[in-house]
Image 1 (tube, helix red, strand yellow):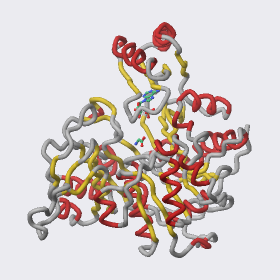
Image 2 (tube, helix red, strand yellow):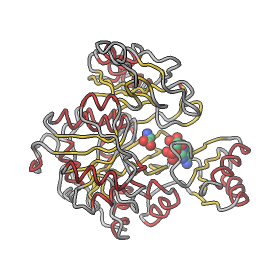
Image 3 (cartoon, helix red, strand yellow):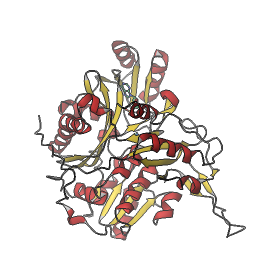
Image 4 (cartoon, protein in one colour):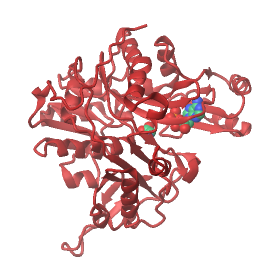
Length: 461
Ligand code: AMP
Ligand code: GLY
């Protein structure tokens, strides 16, 4: 077993590592609400940070300069980082990581928050992730990598219903099917066998938690846990999506683990630190954010997936609660300087994030429709918006330059409405008050985000 040395939290004490204080020149790569949330957190910490986004979106462009490049292209991203002479590059999505963007920029001597192509395989291949977990003795569901339909069917029958079928590679949220319908499981396996490979996994029953760990390749520090709502419809019905809402923190973890902190410590000791040490020992250190997707089963914590980057929409709920300067944490991770660092501090405020999606999402979103009411939504107390897929209409202002620009929804998940308050009840009310002020023809959002945690809060548990 790799050696485990969790760092004790020292809440309320001054941070001894404040050498990064001051203005930092940063490039944030990616187009979505997660990247907007990262940028808003950096600006909230210090609004003199010199931040550029590429490619960004209309909401990000409202806050900072955006440069239109293909952020998945290592040469283009490196040329931009070098040209801007940035001190730090933060890579938001998985696609540039798997394409080797972090390696290319690091080769120029620029600190990067985001793992190498090799380490990002933790997200890029579920088979690779299972191998690392097995070496690190990490608790996870039993799984079989099927190489033929016959192997897949045998594994499905061995595990029994409900069936869990996972594409091996990146699948933009469409790779996992959990179903009691054997024919549907076989069809999903057949589809993904033709697109690179399939895992059949044991079904795990329990509440899901997303825990983000910042890693410098050797040590880790945790952020505060969050819960994501993955299905498109209320009551967790319908197909999986990229995520339809989130909340943070997760007070109910205390019932099971004594405290949220005890839960986080267990995940670090049994999951995060061992995985980081195995990757380091294999010569592929993981520098960036290790997203631990966990299920709390009756037998304990189990990993259902790793991602190699901040989660979306959990980031939108977690970062507004962060008190420790985000730039310090990202820089310390990118430069191998997390050792001995206290756990980041978080406000006790509650955050609720509700995602607005286009009609037809996730299967076939209808895009290009106008959005209205964003200013009114953002004016609700405690509310802000993180844009995911928005653009100014190309002919906006063509006939009347004094008219307000027309904002269009350009993708499946359009924006996140994030509300912060001292209680979940209030945060949830504010988020829903705000999202109802936004106009988008056919727009959809779940109405039950954080409903259960509000009910617990109000029952005094
Ligand atoms: P993933 O893309 O691996 O996060 O999977 C998407 C969703 O499928 C997860 O958030 C879970 O809700 C569900 N899921 C994945 N693996 C399992 C499993 N072994 N048992 C039950 N549900 C799962
Ligand atoms: N919220 C799930 C993800 O970021 O993959």
